[in-house]
Image 1 (cartoon, helix red, strand yellow):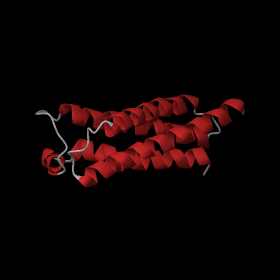
Image 2 (cartoon, rainbow, N blue to C red):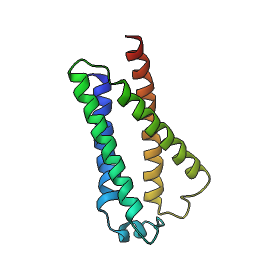
Image 3 (cartoon, rainbow, N blue to C red):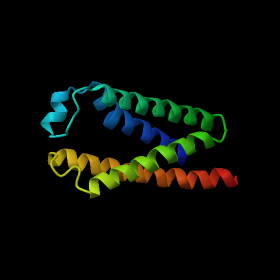
Length: 134
């Protein structure tokens, strides 16, 4: 398994476990338990889970491309935009205290997701340079 393929696999697993499943299936009460504020309607939370799932489909197609010796440049760009902007948004809200009233577990969870998004973004940036020059 290539380094980029492994990165895509890790991204899919982490996104499914840490974002898709909670956003699509966890009840409002669980978010409330961790003092994570929720709106009256869960529709946007569920739609965000759908969007993350769609990204996983894109990452899976990148794995297929790599197996077929194709350059997954569009999927790399998709990941750079998704992870780079998500990490920036997470960093902004985390550093301005938006999570300070959340349960400690929820705060740690958000900071780990922030670091993970930066980590994925760095890996994708390196891969983009490698595949662009190959």
